[in-house]
Amino acid sequence: MPAGVVPLPPPSAEEGFGSPRGISPGDHDGDGRVDLAFGLRGLVVGDSDLRPGATFQSFQGAAGFAAGPVVISEASPTRLASGDLDGDGRTDVAVAGEPVGGGEAGFLPPAFWVDYQGPEPDVRQVLGFDSVADIAVADANGDGRLDLLATRNVGGAPTLFIYRDHDPATGRLTGTPVSVALGVAGTGLRIAAGDVTGDGLADVVVALGGAAGAVLLVQDPAADGGFAAPVAIAIEGASSVAVGDLDGDGRLDVAVARGGAALPADRRRIAILRQDAGGRLARVASDLDALAPVVAVSIADLNGDGRADVLVQTRSPNAVVVFERR
Ligand SMILES: [Ca+2]
Ligand SMILES: [Ca+2]
Ligand SMILES: [Ca+2]
Ligand SMILES: [Ca+2]
Image (tube, rainbow, N blue to C red; front, side):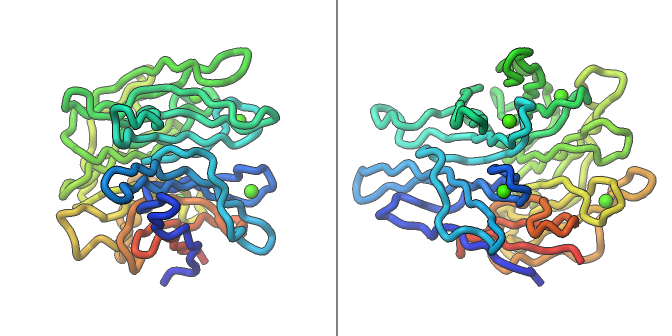
């Protein structure tokens, strides 16, 4: 059973907030407690009044989450990722936006960007293109600096982009990615990154969306930033993935949300795969049940007890359901 629920703002035509689109935990204000960034998509109000939705941060204090989340961007977000991308010690937020309305509506950058948090707040760097499927933060090339990963269908070919070059003066990403053709078919392309094989190099887990499963891209130490051929993870309806050490053995494990539209009866389930001592992923016997339709899954130590928790963003209700490890 879930240990707790963090409510998110409900859909509101007046505010222009629609259904939830993504969460990212991180200590965004540097007080040592994990906060949440999340997105609510836009709404069409009436015949043609487009409301863009918004990206929020909700800060956790000593008494729990503050009642009022803070809007950090009035643009319809799809996915979020957190990490100190410029190496200044402050946790930054990467946001993938989506075009809403198009044409002369014009208020939404169909791109993705990084909000660098720091002494100069809201330093925003627009990195890329539209139609980003997902983003993730990890040290992809093992140089000790966090990098930004993004997935996108390029002419129907699922492709992973890795922004791993940092400006020497500012630490910010240079905006020039390397690209990796995934060689798999998929529409969802939600990703999580981390060393799930125990060799010290970050790997990438990709949920393919629809009724398909997921694949594991194991980083090939012989290829600079390259990956071995995808390995199938047989979890039908994999719609969102997260990486974190869920059992405290120092090895990263994987959580897979089963939210595929082809699996209506399974929309609430989160499968857990533990990394064993040999660096292999093995699914645990029972899934978690989020008790509501799942939008996204994430892993973070939300309650600060030193153990990673599973966070599940749900819709109906808009909320983050928390499974604490005991
Ligand atoms: Ca905090
Ligand atoms: Ca930073
Ligand atoms: Ca790096
Ligand atoms: Ca583990």
